[in-house]
Structure formats: structure tokens, C-alpha cells
Amino acid sequence: MFSWSPPPPGPLDKLFQYIDAHQDEFVQLPDGQSLPLPPIILAELGNDPKKPTVCLYGHLDVQPALRGDGWLTDPFTLAEVDGKLYGRGTTDNKGPVLAWINAVSAFRALDQDLPVNVKFILEGMEEAGSVGLEELVRKEKDRFFSSVDYIVISDNLWISRRRPALTYGTRGNSYFTVEVKCRDQDFHSGTFGGILHEPMADLVALLGSLVDSSGHILIPGIYDQVAPITAEEIQKYKSIDLDLEEYRNSSQVEKFLFDTKEEILMHLWRYPSLSIHGIEGAFDEPGAKTVIPGCVTGKFSIRLVPHMNVSVVEKQVKQHLEAVFSKRNSSNQMAVSLVMGLQPWVAKTNDSQYLAAKRAIRTVFGVEPDMIQDGSTIPIAVTFQDIIDKSVMMLPLGAVDDGEHAQNEKINRWNYIEGSKLFAAFFLEVARLHASDARNLP
Image 1 (cartoon, one colour):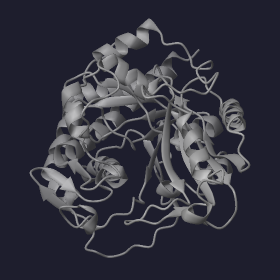
Image 2 (cartoon, rainbow, N blue to C red):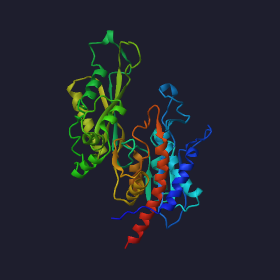
Image 3 (tube, rainbow, N blue to C red):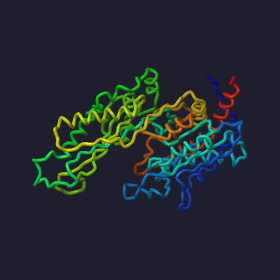
Image 4 (cartoon, rainbow, N blue to C red):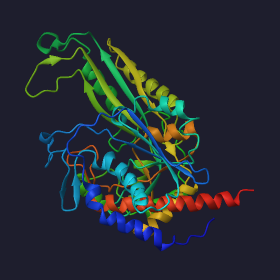
């Protein structure tokens, strides 16, 4: 256990002053030029064997966006309103990527020695499933990544508007389709209604058998693998800065399924959830159409938590749906497919870089960070941890209300500029801890 004392004021004071003085420059974007980007960019700065090497992951691609979808400004022209920087990708993920670059550039502009070697892996296909990323990581394991000590991902959000956080876990995801087919063509309901096993009726019954009105998953055995929640975990949830009323209002939800902060957080992070996403092949356009779909496909997913296993969940889902379907005595055909299976990720929070990040947060923000998990799935964390076998940390920058993937996505100028300072402070802290670890080796 290391005792902590603030870093010398000189280097950080000058770095922070530089970032403040150049914040308008950091906010400016390129002048509308289109830059052809390769799917994955690898970059590095420094190769001093005495310094730790920090690898920073980010992505430059974004979700689609149209002004007509409900944006108050052009989604691809940065607009600052009341200290908020609006635009697609501002928080997911170009803003955090630029904040890392700002931190590096501040050291260089002041001719201060960068205390770490820096590597960047920036992809352009994250929103499309990170096509080719795992293959590249495997290929570069013993080359580009061979000298890496720490990997940092800044691609998620705080759970608060003002209190920073460190993320130490994400849920996995098993995405399924269930197809019910009578024939390829649709039917006229006046000609065939009443004499068929209708595929839509079968499918609705199947989807309705998956989860109850309280959010409890009805698939037998699905909770058997879930790791028990410890008293220490519950204490963590109690200390997290989450205003339930503010969270509910910002989510525009009348009522959640649970009433306490601890229950909400546990069901977001530590319990599996099942969501039904849509039905393919059904009539969904405006107006009335008296059609019986001949073939329909339902789509649903289960968010996985430790120690759930994708292959076990797949078997449980198929057995359950086959049992429900057989009881309907339908003449239709049913097929269940696992489209995507991603394991959950959990970090080691006693690693040096988590300690360094906590110290950097205290230096810049003056508070202890919320230690949080993320209910969504970030596959790259598992990829890095399993293939490269190095410490992986998630250091988010954006606030809970940034609206990633939604209309009017934004990042606060405050988060962006103070985040640039945070990243600079992190470089200094991780270098100090790494040197201390090296001295303590036998």
C-alpha cells in the first residue's frame, strides 16, 4: 500500500495553465475537410525503457445522425451552447481521444519531459462491431503491444453530472434471433385467418415467455451462474453519487422497476437483463394492412454478468424456447440462433494504474472517484485483457447526461478541459507508481 502525496506543483501547474490558455484551440475542429481514415491507426511517442508505456484506445467513427431526427443543431458541425459542445461524436468518442492528445501536446509545448511512453490504437469501425480489431491485436501482440504496461479506455461515461468515476467492469452480451416460419409469402387475413397457426402469434408467445413484468428473466437456470454479491460490493453502491430523481427525470422515465439506488445499480451492473429489440418481417408501416406474415424473426439479447458463460446461456435459451414452442402444437418451424456472444469484463482495481488514476482525480477534481461498472458491453476490454494479458482500465470523461448515440449528443467544455488536465496528471502519477513498483521488486 503506497502513501500518497500530491505531485510537485511546478510541472502540473504549468501544464494546467497551458491547457486553460489553449482551451479554445482544443475545442476547434478541422475546417470541414474530409480525411480518409484507415480502419485502425497505430501510433507511438517515445520508447524509453526506463518509462512505463501507456496504450490509449479510442475510436473515431460515430453513429449516424441527421438534423431532421431531432437535433437542435447540425450534428456534424460543432456548436457550443451554454458551455456544452454539441455534435455527433463529441463524447463518443472523439472528445476523449482529443483530450488525450491535448495532454500529450501540453507536455511537448512546454518542453516538459513526457513521463511515459505513449501508444495510441484508434479504430474507425467500433460502431460497426470493431471489424478486424481482434485479428490486429493478435497479430501485433508481440510487436506493437509487446512493450505496453497499461491499457486505458476512455469510451464510457460517469454515472453523475459532476463527480468523476473509474469503471472496473462491464456486462457481456448474448444476442439472439428466433424465427418462426410457415412459408415465404405472406397471407391475406380474410382468406386464411382462423385456419392457420400464425407465425406472429407463435412469436409473440415465445417472446412473452422470456421475461416478466418485473424484469425477472424466466429462462430456467439463467441465474445459477451469477456470482454472489458481497457485502463489500453493496457498500460501494451506497457510496456512489447517484441522484435517483435526477436520473429518472433525465431519462424521461415515469418510474423505474426498483426504488433504491442500490437496487438500481445492482440490476444495471450485477444482474443479467433481457431486452426484446424488435420483429423482422412484420407489418410496421403507417396505415392498415390486413396481412398475416408468413415468416417473422424476433430479436432479443441478454446482458451477461460474472460468472455467466455464453455457451451455457445459449443452451438454456434454446431449451426454453423449444419447450414453450412444443406446448403450442404449432405446425410452423422455429429456429433459434446466437448472433453474438460477448463475455463480461472485470478489472483488477488494485493495479497501479487504478491507484494512479485515483490520485490524478483527487489532484484535478478534489474528490474521490465513484467506482462504477457499466451495464453495456465494451468488447475491446476483454480482447485486450485476454490476448495481451496486461492491465486494462476504463477512465471515462463524459457526464451521465451526454447522450451518446442519441440526438443532441454533447460533452461539457468543463469535462473536456478538466479531463485533459486529468490525463496529464495521470501520466505523472502512473510514472511515479511504476517507478516505485520497480524499486520494490526483489
